[in-house]
Length: 291
Image 1: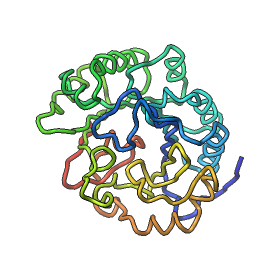
Image 2: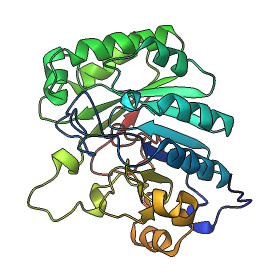
Image 3: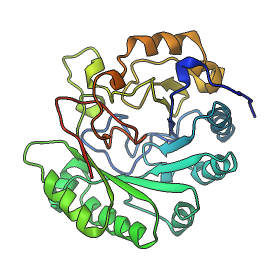
């Protein structure tokens, strides 16, 4: 396991790393920033590659790892990686769509130090299913969300506005009535399936607002960037170079210097589906909420 006693200035404030342990997902959400879907694979990162990345996260003093996708519960590595992260005394969050949760997954989620996150789009099943493009997804997600609450699993839910007329406020009210304490509201960002086909790449203003400065992400193939929205700004590859090498390298520092630090602009509440890291985001033109 790498040993780093003090993180370099370029990564000293990184609070979390999003590990995209698979690109496979049972849904194909219309706004998905990672282009995940049922026909996608798990990527080229092996279990050992992911374990080494988790070792680097811990050694660099980064306190939290998110296992996301795609749908992380479809990865054959999820259980082993949660065990490994907890052994390294890291906080763990699993960001799942909660449509299909096997009994073994509930046991995993109930472990001390693990928390759960999901996305919810409307109190109207038809609207929710319109976003996920899968009929019945609303009923399954809602039922498993309620189950998670009954089990006492720490949970946060992000409501993302994808289209005009979407019942975002009603969804928030329903979640509150169910007992969800952590609710975030955001709008879909123009990346991935929601990207502007006329734009060559996302603008910095379209990003999550904390890219590179306070978070990092690793793709299923090991590419390292500032968050799952900034895939067009790769700084290296964790599989080939090692995460610690990338995060302490000159390219990471150079990209970080180019990306405006949201802390110098504003401090609204955290975003949601585009922000599994659950750290503050900056989006002055759209008021996110968390209560």
